[in-house]
Structure formats: C-alpha cells, structure tokens
Image (cartoon, rainbow, N blue to C red):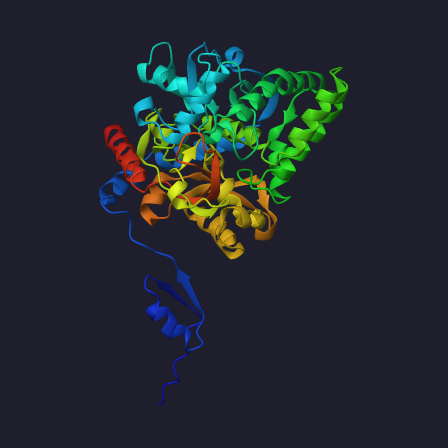
Length: 468
C-alpha cells in the first residue's frame, strides 16, 4: 500500500532569526514572521514575580479604564500664581527633580529668561549668580503641581496657564501658553524678543483668552483630540487641525470681548500662525487622563514619561510618585540651518506625556506628514504605530487611526511588556540647542533610556513579593 505524498503546510510561523523563514518562503510556503526577542537582561526573575502577582490583571484593567474614562475640558486661562499658588522666586520645570548644578544649557537659559521676566534680575545673565546662590529661588517639577511643560517647561508666577478639568471628578491639570517655534523660552532662548513676547502673552493674550473662555464656556479638549487624530495630527509635533479647531471655538467670544480690535487681531494672527498652539492643551489633557490611572496597587502601567534635559524619568501607577531615571538620550532627526548633532541637547520636556497616553510617536500612522519634520519614512510611521501595540495594555477608541482601519491608538504602556519584548516607546520631539540662549536646533525621534524600565520592574516585583 503506497503512502500518499505529504502535503506542504498551509503556513509556517517563524520566531527569531530570519534564516529558516527565508528558506521556507523560498519554497512558496506562506510565512508569518514573529518579531520575538529575549527579555531585557537581568529581568527574568522580576518578570516572573510580576506575572505571578494576582492583582496585576485587574489592576491594569482598572488603570486603563480610568484613563480612558476621563473627559478633559478646557475651563479657564489664568496666571500661575493663582491656579498653582506659585510665589515670587518659585519656578517649575519639565522632567524629574533637578537642581541648578545639574541643569542643561536650555534649562538654564529658560530659567534665566524667566527670572528676568519676573523682574528678579535686570539682565538674564545676572540670574546665573541668583540660581547658583539659591537664595530666594526654588525649582520643582511641573508634574509635582499637576502641570506639564514642553521642552524646558519653565513656569513662573506671572505666566498664564491653560486649566483642564475632568467634570466627573473635578481633577485639574495645567500648562503654560505656547510661544511658537524657534527662539523661545522653552527652548532655552532668553533674548529681548523672547521677553517681549512673554510680556505680550501676559498682558494681552492671556487675559483675552480668559475672557473668551468665560463667555463661551468650557471647550471639550478630548473631542478635539479625537477629531484631529483623524485629520492628520498626532498631537505632539503636529497640532495644526487642533489649533484651528480651538481657535474656531473661541473666535466668536474673542471678537465680542470688547477689547481693542487691533489686539484681538494680533491674537488671531499669533494663534492661527502657530501650528503648535494646541500642544499646550493636548499635554494637560493627556496628563489629566493619566493622573486618573495613578496609585493602583499592582498596576504596571506607566503614568508619566518626562525629561529635564539631563535625566529621563518615568512614573508607574503601582509605585506611587517614585521616579525611575537614567541619562536622557540625544534624538536622531533633522536639523535647522547649519545646526548638527554637536549643537543639540539631550532629550528634554514633559511633552512625552502625549506618547504616554497613546499620541505623538504612538500615533504617527495618522500623521505621515510628520516624517518631514522629525525624519524617518511613511512606512516607518505605520510600523511604529503597530509596534507600540506590543507594549501597551489596550487601545483608545476615541483616537481612531483611519489608515489602520480606525484602530484606536496603542494606550497604557506596560513596564512588564517593555522588559519582556525589549521594545522601547517611540517619541517624536523637538531638539533644543545645548547652549543656553540658542533656541531650537531641530526635531527628531528618540526613545527612553532602556535602563529605567528594569528599574521600575524591580520596584514592582518587590511590591508584588511583599503583597504575596
């Protein structure tokens, strides 16, 4: 009795090296390639401890649900002295805690400019001695005051802030107004034109926006984010649609404010010509959602990623307010004019809160035009949004990506998944000059330093063992 010839497999799943997969594919057999890699070195025991934590699944589901349930509304624009309680000499900054001695060039430049803006010194250069002495001045992370700040993120008492609120809980978050691109305070510039713009924002733009918002009522920032993701914005380095929708919502009340027509026209031109203006609404909206996911015992979800130009830090739901830090990396991207890598400062800013929530680099597939600003290619952008799903707990259905068949953006970074796969969160970002006073030198792509995730995992594992 003869045996029938064996049938070729319908398909083959290949894990690891491509050599076998290529050989099978050459025989016209469909191959599904799985991008598997070993866990990060030294994490096996901690991964096992976290995986065995009986609280983990429910805790992560709760943290993600809390984040997705938040409805962020822009409810006010007001001075930082009023809404954050900042007193003269108190300054907030981006990223984890930092002192003047360890501050990078752009962070120092922003603090020097802010000190002059507040009238603490006549010349920004004089602020160096002020901060070195430390008399009458203090530095604190924005995140510690429920705030976020792009790039250097420096906030001083006289700066006006966007105020975001979740109506269900009354929780609030805050962010300064966006200055635009180029030579601006947040990139470490402090020249006369920078201070003049800050004074105009304090005296004209802030009060006008405050009056308009009072008259119009709250603006649904979460709804704008949902719309702009479907209009080609990823809410970190591309905010064009979001900015124009915000201006649309506030324009009637701005016109009816009764303020001088020329000043209103100035404000229209400034906001309409600043494609990044909505970034400073998107950031606190993301923080508001992520703050709702904090302090869930057993949760491995990242609730903040932030950089101060020296350190990159993360906070995790299950480990409270503890920061896990490592030296910030230099972004890889495109440079302005004659600037090059030697001119750029390591990664800086709280704006990675957008990626933490599932926007920015996680949503690059929805904004292929962004690659012309930060580098890479359109296929890279699509692949990145798909890859980020491997290290997240779920998707955000409010932020649906048309080109991915309206799949929600990958949301809820899982420390354990990052350590298990070795895939790091993708961030797109601006680049500040490493010397104080230079301003922006480019934009690019960057990841967190890998070491912070095993450190966070170790802390989570210790808590899991204690709980067991």
